[in-house]
Image (tube, rainbow, N blue to C red):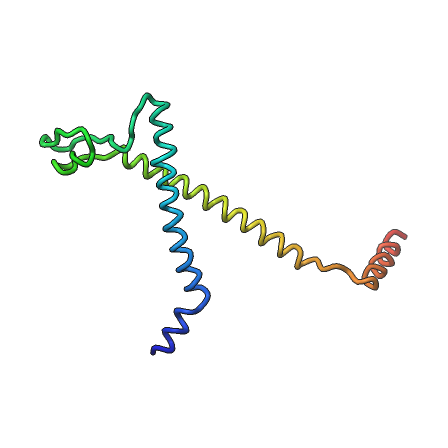
Length: 137
């Protein structure tokens, strides 16, 4: 059973998946920082200093705080600003992954095209020319 597990764990697909998950988590942290530290402050500055991450709608009469973290301690809140930030995160991640996969597909397609059409030998070139001449008559 241990040997079977080793074969499973060390297969290329499992290792590739593990690497993908680790890189994806790191990439997610980078995008989260990009959105919260770069994009949202710019959006906030353009919209008159608004900080979307702190926007919420209190769902309980007990909520009197103006900061989201404090309001969550007091009761139920609808944190729509945080949702907006996370939605922007998702859109950025999805778009970047789309660009990466699109680029990889183009590279794979180019490689397959190169493999499909090998260079003709001199003999094949001559035969092709003869065929073309015979067709033209």
